[in-house]
Amino acid sequence: MSKGLVVAAVDTGSIAEEMEIQVGDRVLAVNDEELKDIIDFQFGVSEEEFTLLVEKPNGDQWELEIEKAPGEFLGLEVETISSDGLKVCRNNCTFCFVAQMPKGMRRTLYDKDDDYRLSLTQGSFITLSNLSEEELERIISLHLSPLYISVHAWDSDVRSRLMRNPHAGKLPEQIKRLAEAGIMIHAQVVLVPDHNDGDVLIETVQRLGELFPAIQSIAVVPVGLTRYREKLAALRGFTPDEARWILDKAECWQTDFLAKTGLHLVYFADEFYVLAGREFPESSVYDDFPQLENGVGMARKFITEIESGLSFLPEEVSERRVHLVTGTSAQKLFEVWRERLERRISGLKVIIHVIYNDFFGLSVTCAGLLTAQDIAHQLGDLSGEEFLIPRMMLKADDDVFLDDRSVTWLEETVNGKARIVENNGLAFLEHVIGYPLEVDRFE
Image 1 (tube, rainbow, N blue to C red):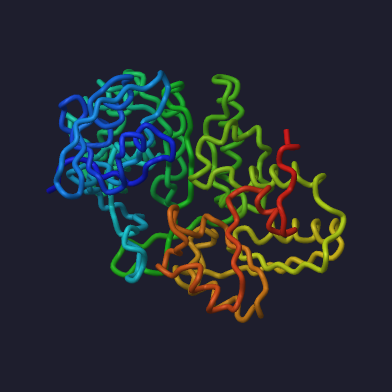
Image 2: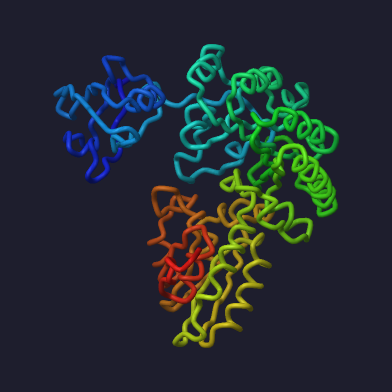
């Protein structure tokens, strides 16, 4: 296997550009220490003076002496986490979403990784059950923090059964060890009815809360189930009554934690509030939104951003029609705002298209898991009109949906003009009216 880390991007005007480092080059060593992974790289280039060994695509090797000011960045990104590849997950979780994937999706969606380096650099959740003692010691000795950890259950027997890995039961001692070493942790609980809910959930939240401030947040999210579960364990989703019970507990825990820690500490996925038929909590309940990317607090943050921009909207537009694509879980939210915006802005018409997830199954309701195929089938012919696509539906670094179809393919199929909307309320308002708002006036 090739050594070093391949350069993926070089910032304009950066030290890396001045040193003529280019995309495709391979960084082999820092200060004569061979690079094994991105951790070695990040620690090495954090110094103000260091030597970089770079290999060009033609095999030439350059030894570069680097000097930079305190806090100045080298200005390059690498495309690989490690020269040995990602650490593969050996769990066989009963609720694993990857195991519920059909063929023909984006290739990267089938990767089952459990790599602490991705947790540190990208906020990916790891289980700790695939960590070696050497890796655990490295995390502690280098103080790699914060980490994002999938807890699921504090009870060792329950966790081992749920993840189908006997090593999963070591979690309490592992987390305590990390906490004692000062490693900050954002915890996740994927909640599965009849498995880790009820008393198991109560114990999990209580035990994690006792480890504050090492435990910085606890996110509770419902299990995601697709229709591709042949030969997999029989699981079900939560009922509205169960969701209401969970949220009743949530309010008690949050009140208690706020008094003890100054934070609400435990946060619940937007899907629970939709299922329970309850309003989303106020922004203050989410503190600083520590697990936004986990679907926790997205709706409230979006609403707050829209509300902050209302006073900057025009009173009228020139006969504007725009189509909005969303999933079933956000239907009520967007219907409310469609009505408010049309009433506020003369000449505006917003058509909401609630897309049912026929591909994964109707129990999958969030917009981020919609495919281009379902959108195309349910939109029909838009006769050249604009339609808004939330960024969350697409791959982070490419305009491609989960089913590997592009935005261009969707535009051609529905005869429309796609507008990709970043995941915030201000961007939504700007795309609805068709031009930028005066963002410099926002406080």
